[in-house]
Image (cartoon, rainbow, N blue to C red; front, side, top):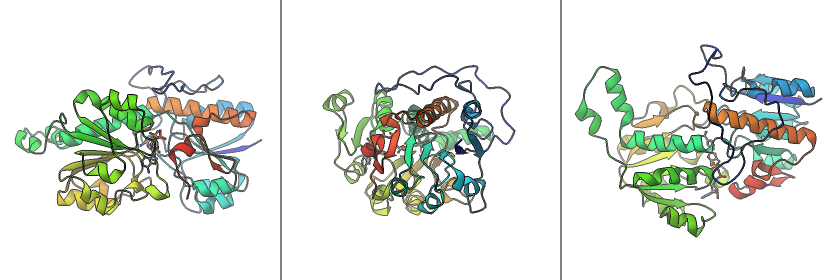
Length: 386
Ligand code: NAD
């Protein structure tokens, strides 16, 4: 019997939903790059479209855990030495966590987790795990690559439109009974004709570019591995050798690279200063890619016209985090990758990975971040471990 320690975000404050606004979600079988959506063995343990990312939803895993006889601990209590997470960590063979409510697996915590063999991210982005420490301890790190990429790409498109068109303040005027056209539009532009650049054009970044193409923008990108000439031609992409070159060439910058030691603070005060006056910055990748206070200064001084995204540090963000109240922000809690649609896939992918792990079968390479003491699969392509 193994102990599976699962950290999920708390239930809705009004309680677990008795019903949903829609009766079903579309069935997605393949992603744009041809990768198949998760294919766990039946039964699935939940109905796609149900809220499974929270504690009561338990990723729909109760049935599987009961049938396979594993001890299954589900908690949202993840921070501090007296948390349920720290209490159970020394017993855990498997830890499941989510980027939206990350159970930070620091080197210190990994040192306490003597039995830990698998750190599974129910979602995408495993920077809440100290990858080098996990590799040293021979812990497999896996995530459900592809599961919520389109949801995040949609959030980026939405954030771009919301910032540039000044949607959020205009909505507030409407809600508060106003009809202040001039107030609404004195910061409002069309995105048509603007230059948009993404730092990272992997699964999400490329999906963003494809979705923005019909809006009539000029599209730029930079990333570690240059895209194929066919894709560059299809989308009329302008390639930049690095983020600094891209930052000064576009009106809207999107960040879509993983967080690892050398990408931390990539957008510091100097990089922000390279951006055009009145540019917008969108970040649904990871908060520590940017310097928190430098962003506040850039938006407050008017150098940047706005900042939007859904990633913070730490998470959950403290009530006094300056991005909550800085002007011209389009921030949400970390939600872009956990729509009910995304949850259905990352919960199914979590089950698939657990079944492989417990049945001694290989985990798909695209799901692997660390394996056999080193970066593997998607981890080897997208991360660095220094
Ligand atoms: P991906 O692995 O498909 O793509 C990442 C790309 O970044 C890769 O192609 C890689 O070559 C490139 N890259 C890595 N380091 C780089 C660097 N220093 N400079 C330029 N390019 C670099 O990942 P993805 O699925 O597109 O996700 C990207 C990131 O988005 C994740 O790592 C995660 O942090 C974040 N994410 C956020 C959410 C959310 O809910 N907000 C959900 C999913 C993913």
